[in-house]
Image (cartoon, rainbow, N blue to C red; front, side, top):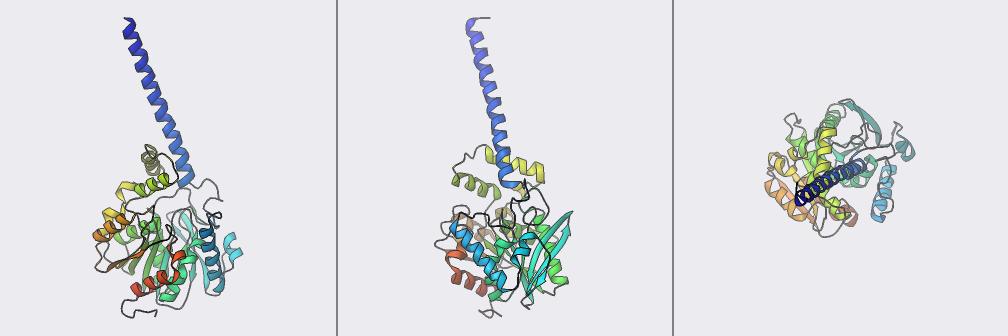
Length: 336
């Protein structure tokens, strides 16, 4: 063997070894990212607590939501401990589905319809209190829920809407059969909006699910996740793709098969898209794409010029609440 041949072999071996090392390192990084963002590694993760106490807006929303819940009889301390109580208009509920114990709170305002508020990733039912006043004004009873692996509900992995949509259908059945709600609406925030689309396009979706209010819906979880990585100044390739493979391996969820942009044309109940013009995670042009493809005969986009992702009500309380009231009461134009 010539000296040149030996050098080429050595160089090739170093390239292969370097490539394998890079690939293994990327898998390690992806696993750490997956563990840090989509796995409940400890009961304190995604608990019934403010998810971002250092974020002034988030903390203000949290405290305002607690004040609303307290005004209707909620025992906040008991709620944070997971104690089951009924006081004032608030009743703690529990259902079981697919081997998971799931928890929620129902606020009964004596209406004939209810909304289920589905929060986004990392949030418990207590986060949803902040959005509930809009529906109280619009003439709804309100159910807030701990989705799988959040709050007091069972689970280890965030399944990105799959499974959660079947849980929510069961919650809806309870509200309809036991509590006499004739129709159910969904208010889905970010990933919760994805869950709403999965509910409304499921063959087994009950007919009493009558509408969707989508706040910050994304075209696909993969793209939304990529935007989060960019916002946090993390590299996206190949980590995002590897994390999506880990999601499928550990939860069975194929994110490419549940993209809202590919399903929204099959949604035929009224849909209100609430969107921020400058939402970094759920881009304005993506909202337009979803709206244009949506199969609903009655659909609308409510644009807000400022306000962070999922914080639009904080910046525009009166306008936010009024948009929901008018859309969900098309005949009256006011709360029932």
